[in-house]
Image (tube, rainbow, N blue to C red):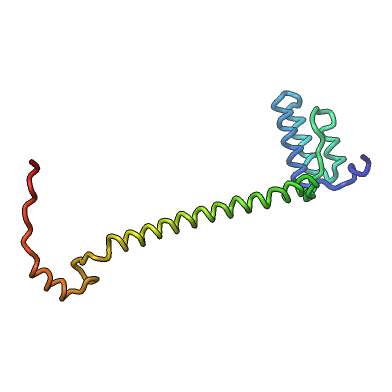
Length: 151
């Protein structure tokens, strides 16, 4: 603990202590004059030992040094789970791709069959059937008859 008292404090540590002093004043633990004195001491402190002395008589948690978070290493269980789940996920994705391909190929086959059965023999008015032939055929069409009434 003696080593911690000599370590230099950061601005964030000083702000944390100042906030703690303000809360203590709001709770009625400190007077306004004491708050001013302790805030001056807080912002003038250079080490953790000086900061700890400012809040030594107040309940609460001591100031901790800000440490960099260490990257967590993969534990053996996560590696085993990864080895088991990776093939399962890949097989599910492959099955989904096969199903989508089957749906599109069945749709295409139905379109082709429909075109072969119903689309080849009809000639429509438009550029696909040839403009001159359409005009010639249109002049020879019989007049349309009225629909038969239902009896």
